[in-house]
Length: 256
Ligand code: IPE
Ligand code: IPE
Ligand code: MG
Image (spheres, rainbow, N blue to C red):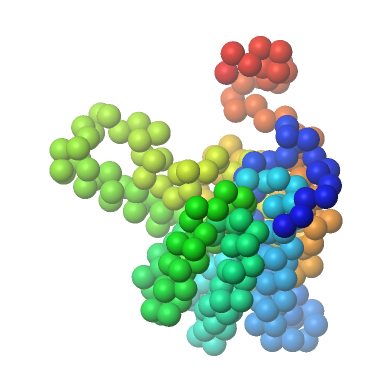
C-alpha cells in the first residue's frame, strides 16, 4: 500500500472510520440487475476504502457487512452474501497481509458454515501481528448482541468472584466489548441515504461524528471518502465541553 500523498494533517484525520455499506440492492435495481449484482459490485468499493485508508494513514476501518437481522432476507440473497464473503477472504487475504493490514471479524461467527469460520480464523491469525491498517468486518453482528455478550462476560466474572458489582465502571464494562484495542470511531459513514444506525456499534458510536450520504455503496469511491473526511475535519468535537473550552484545550491540553 503506497502512501504517495497525505492530504490530511494528523489533527484532521480520523483515527478510526466505521462504515455502514448500504445501497447495494438499489444500485442493482437502478440497472435492472438482481440485488446480488449490487453486492458483487460493492466488493470493489471495499477494496478502494481499505486502500485509501491505508494510504492516508487512518489507523482503523470497521465495515458493516452483514447484520444479525440480515438473515431475514431471501435465502438466495443470504447465500450469495455468504459465498461472496468466503470468496473475497480467499482472494484478498494474501494481498492484505502483504500490505501489513490486520484483519478481524466481529459478530457471532458460530452461525456461519464451517469453511467460512475456518477462513475467518486463518485470515485473523495470518495477519494478527501486522501493524498497518486495522480492518474489522462486522458480520452477523448486532450492537445489542455485542452488549448482551459483554453483560454475560461480566456476570460470569461476578459469579466467579473476580469482580464486585460496584467495581463495574464504564471502562470495565467496555473492556468486555469488541474493538477494545482500537480507539473509538471518530467518523461514522452511512451510504445509501438512510439516516439510521441499524444496530451497528451502539456503544462505541456514543461520541462519533456522523456522516450520511445518498451515494450508493458501489458508487462510493476514494473521492467520496475524501469528501467525508474533509467534512469531518471541519467539525468541532466537544465531548460535553463548551466550544470555548475546547479551543483553550489546544493551548492547554492539561485541562482534558
Ligand atoms: C447493503 O446493501 C448490504 C447488506 C446489507 C448486506 P443493501 O442490500 O441493504 O442495499 P439496499 O439498502 O437494499 O439498497
Ligand atoms: C445495515 O443495512 C446493515 C449492513 C449494511 C450490513 P440494512 O440495509 O440491513 O439496514 P436497514 O434494514 O435498512 O435498517
Ligand atoms: Mg439496505
